[in-house]
Length: 214
Image 1 (cartoon, helix red, strand yellow):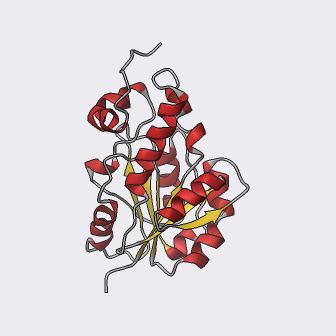
Image 2 (cartoon, rainbow, N blue to C red):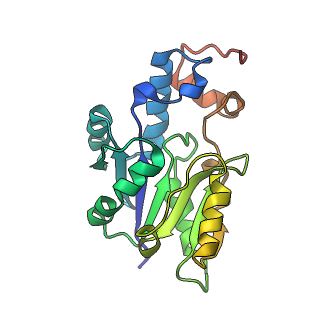
């Protein structure tokens, strides 16, 4: 039987999302864009467990409406939130692989297939770390860990997280395998990213008018 996957998606308040793009969108547009992207990743599915980590009541309600399990935390920030909810996540699923994915991957419409294919690749190593980086090869858009590794993993998201997560895997004696899938490499953080998914933004925000960075 194929290994079971649990997708863990940290989702912050839509109202406060994408603050770095404030020069390009109104607050309402940023909120709608953040939710539209999250709806791509947090989708009702039968082929994996979906777990949303959040500290916002409206996000929790939204996640449940999309058939996701919700794990709440009082912690703020991505790394503290994931650390604080680690045990709760493990109690909520019996999946073999715990896969942390960002909520701003607008092209990841078949994320479970992409991750499942990478996990299923022949390997001599049972314990290994799978990562999908961003287009700049700096961040960690998707991080796939076996259940045993997730139980003691130190999350190091932020600038240079790919290198930090690689170094941690090396310290633990675990090989790192990159997931080569273009749909997982595109997130929306900066002005340059907007051009990559212009059609997506125009579709979900028909009132958006592209502007040059200030």
